Amino acid sequence: MNIEIERKFLVKDESFKSMATESHRLTQGYICKESGRTVRVRLWDDKGYLTIKGAGSASGMSRYEWEKEISAEDARDLFMLCQSGIIDKTRYIVPVDGKTFEVDEFYGENAGLVMAEIELESEDAAFTRPSWLGKEVTGDRRYYNSMLSVHPFSEWRQDSN
Image (cartoon, rainbow, N blue to C red; front, side, top):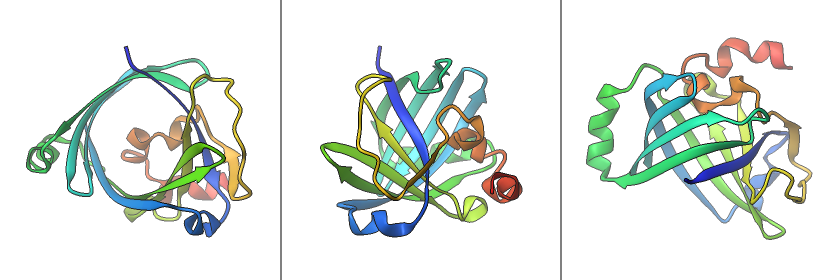
């Protein structure tokens, strides 16, 4: 079983961009968004992926994840089966002291949201916090991409400031 352990943070400024080693355009939709499971279709540049995620731990840091690469054409076809609320973002890959942050800059109804994730070996693993890293939002369901597709940042961001 593949367990994903990650922490999520808001991003304070754009200084991370000068540290990024690569960036990718991602578009993703959800075939299923039920409590405890999601089925996601994603286009990552010109590659397709199908991902199934299980329920998260109490802390929101760990959950089961299964992912397979599919053709871009199959991904585009599967978007027709997705529920409304497609996520559109650029992902920046930002190495910091031997670890990698993935920083997502969202567009469309989620414009203005910039969020960083770091995958860890364990829930208590240590890592360096770069100066651009803001408030931790791990476990806050509003920041799950599956939730952003239903309740976009533009609808609730005034409450988060």
